[in-house]
Image (cartoon, rainbow, N blue to C red; front, top):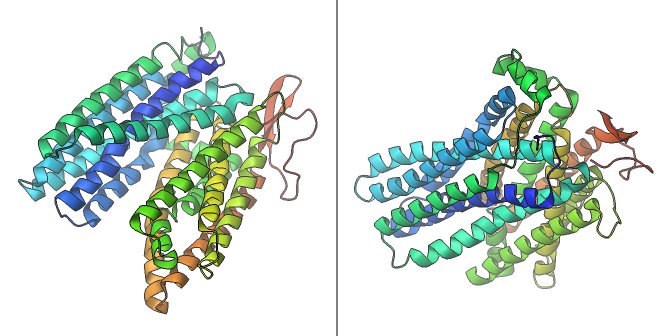
Length: 455
C-alpha cells in the first residue's frame, strides 16, 4: 500500500487512537495537575493558569513541525517524535509538581520546561496527524473522520480521568508521579501501535518530491501566507476559536451567580453542554457524510450554519440572564453546545479538505499555520472572556452585565466568522478529479449545486 491510498474506516479509527493517547496525557497535565497545585498545595491559581497558557503559546511552532514533515513527505516519524516529547513532558510536569512541595522555585522552573515540552509534543504530533488524515481520507468521509478523531480524543480524557482518579487515592505526590508515568508510557505505546503501517510506503512521485531542494522555512511559510485561501482560513480559525473559547471560564460562574445553581448543578450543566457538542458533531457527520445515502449540505455550509447557530445561542443566553426565573437554562446551554459541535466538526473537516489546496507539498505548513491560530486563539479566548467579564462587572457593578456583554461579543465574533467562512474557497469535483477551489461570493448559496463535490 502506498501512502496515497484512501484510508478505510478501520484506518481512520486507528489514527484516532493517536488522539486518544494525546488526550490521555494532556488531561493529566492541564486538569489534574492544575487541581493538585491549587487545592492540595494551596498555590495561586495563576501558576497553573500560566503553565497551561504556556503550552498553548508554544504551539505557535506548529507551522515549523508541519514544514519538517513536508520535507520528507512522511508524517509518521513526526507523530511518534511528538508523542515521545509529549510523554516526557507529561512525566516531567508531574515530577515538577511533586518537587514544588520541597522547593517551590526549582519545581516551577522544571514545570516551565515540562509544559514547554507538552506544547511542542502536542504541536508536532497533532499537526502531522491532521495532515496525514487530510491526505488519506476520502472527501466524502472527512466530516465523519473529524468526528471520530475528536470523539476519540474526548474518550482519552474520560478514560484517563476516571482510571487515574481511582489510582490517585489516597493521594500523595509519589503516587501522582507513578500514575502519570504509567499513563504516559501506555499512551506512547498506544500511539506506536496506532500508526504502525497505516501511512504505508511513499509513492515514486513522493520520493522524487522529497529529494528535491526545498525552500527555507520562512520562505515556505511566506508562500503559504501569500495564498488568499490559506490566509482567509487562518483568520477564520482565529476569530471562530476565540469566540468558541471565550465562554469556557465564565459559563459555570454565570449559572451560579445569575441562576443560583449550586456547584454540583453547574457541573452537571457543563455536562449538558458537552453532550450537546457531541450530538452536534455526530449529526453533522451523519448528514455531511451521507447517512443511508442521503447527504445534506457541504462542510462549508455546515461551518457557516454552525457559526450562525452559535451566535444565536449566545445571544439567547445573554438575553436569558435578564429573566433567570423563567428562562430554560439547560435547553439554552444544550443548544449552544450543539451549535458549537456542528461548527467545530465541519471546520475541522474543511481544514482537512483545504490543506492540499494551493502550492504543492505545503500541506504541513498550512495545517501548522491553522493549528497555531487555533491554539493561540483558544488560549487568549478563555483568559479574555474571564478578564472582560470581571472588568465590566467592576465598571458597572453588575455581574449580569459583565457576563451578558461577553456573550454578545462572542455572538458578534461568530457572525464575523460566518462571513469569513462564506468567502473561503470551495473544492469542486470536475469529471472525477478535484479542481482548484474558487473564492465564493458573500451572497452565494451555502448548499452546493447539483453534481458539485462537497468539501
